[in-house]
Length: 344
Ligand code: PHE
Image 1 (tube, rainbow, N blue to C red):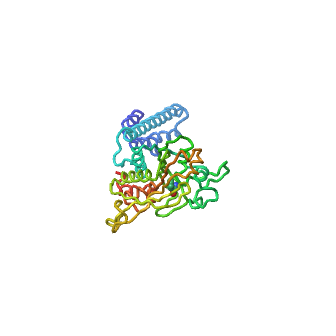
Image 2: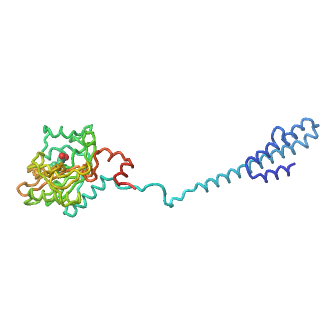
Image 3: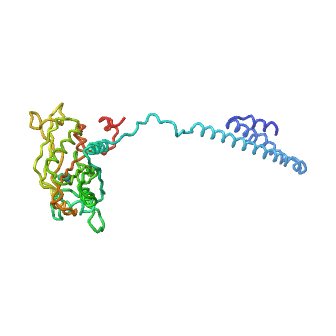
């Protein structure tokens, strides 16, 4: 019986075959169970002789079953591990590659355009103190512009009140206080205002421009903006209109409009906005840097003059790509990115 059972265990190639052997040997009607039952009917002498043999048989078979079962489970696990191996070096298929976000693409493009004009890229912190964001820019504490900016203030005690910068203009201050003129920089980055609708999001992007040198005039400003907008919109027929305006940190100040015409229900940048069927669209704030700002940075305004401009990067992207809602920029929706050709 022993040889028979051990051979059956050996021959079993699957768990259910092994289970059949177990039932056959150790189940209620099993052969070994049957033998164990006979022990009670034996004489003490016979039991002493048969008992150890039968128990020994049961142990041997139980052990063989356990060993065979463990081996089978190990083999099954090995097979599963082998079949589920992931080769990290294989190329992934079916997953679209990532792409640079349209806002980042536009910022890169702007940095390239201005690099050609000799502008370096400057940066500043998004958590800014109110001196850099307002005071040094000639926006004193009582100035209504502070309220107009829908500023996010940081809670807690700080030496100076801290804000999420409401524009990139504080980078003008940081640049003028940390480096000597002549200065030619652009400063792209995130800015924050507590405002939200189709064309306003609490976080958006601006790009600032600053030139400080000797004998800088509005003419330099206009030429720079014209050259930049022609390169950005990839059109030679860009027409600018400078409208007198007001910013505390520039004097005189001008808002800059570009002419456009309607085509298939969409605005197409180019041409004079005064042409039949045309219009003007505001794209920039700008002006000659206010003497008080130059002074606040420790420079002599009689020696150094310059111009500054600022514009919304997201807005420029919307104009260039014919988008009418700002919010999808920050939704991370692949369908939208694909629709505008920004994702594979
Ligand atoms: N900082 C201004 C704004 O956010 C834009 C601006 C920058 C205007 C530089 C003039 C000069 O609206």
